[in-house]
Image (tube, rainbow, N blue to C red; front, side, top):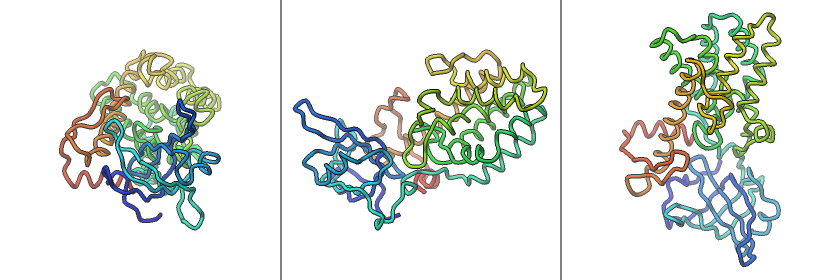
Length: 334
C-alpha cells in the first residue's frame, strides 16, 4: 500500500492525490444530456461522493469500463456540497499493476484478532449443555462455512461494517445474551446463545466482501434471514432425532431477530428468548454504528455530526479520551 494521508484527515481545500476504491458507481446524464459519473470513493477511513464530468481527464476510460471494486488514482481537491465533504475530481485513472495496490488495502478490519475470536466462539459452543444444539452448532461452524463467518463483515455500511465484523458482532451478542440469562432464569440459555450465534450467519452468503462490500445476487433475492432459516432446516435433518420444537424455536429466533415486520423480520418476536435476542442485536449494532459515525466526523467542525438517515438524527460529538480514540482509529484504519 502506498503512503497517503487518510481521507478522514483532509479538510475543504486540501489537495487529493490518492489511490481510492470505487464503492458506488453510476453513470448518469444531466437534464441537458451531459454525461457524468456519480461515484463514492473511499479508503479505510471514510467514503466520499465525487462527480466525474465528461471534461475530466480520464473520464472516458472510467465511464466505459469502471465498476464497483475498481481501484482508481484520483487527483483533485476536497470540496463541499450541502455542507458535506466531497471530492472535486480533476483527473482519474485506473490503478496499474506497477502501482502495487490491492482492494484489501482499502478495506477496514476489526481490531480484534480473528483467530482469537474463533477460539472464543468454539469455547462458548463447548459450554452448550443441550447436545442437539451443540451438535448443530459444531456442524455449522466448521470448514469453509467457519472461514466465511470469520471473514465476513456484519453489514454493508451501518454496523460492524469491516472484515471480521460478523464474528465480532456475534461475540458481543453472546455476552449480552449470557448476561440476560443470568438476570432472567426463565430464559433457555442454550437456545438464546445458539440464536445469537446463528442470527446473522446468512450474511456470509448475502454479502460479497472481496473488494467493496456489496450484496450478492442470492442476498438480494433471498436475504440473510431466509438463507439462515433454510440452513437450519437442512442441517437439523442431518442430526438423527433432532427435536422439532427446538428446530422451530431456533428458526423463530432467526426470523424474528430484527424485531418488527417493517424491519424485514418475517415474524415478530413471540418468545422471551426472541425478544432478548432482538434487543441484544439492537444494542450491539447501534452502539457500534453510533460510535463509528461519531469517530468518522470527530475532526470536522462543530459539535454535531451530519444527519444520519439510518439513525434518524444527528449525533453529539462528545470528547473521547485520546487513548480510546487511538484504539478506535486502529480498528477502522489498520
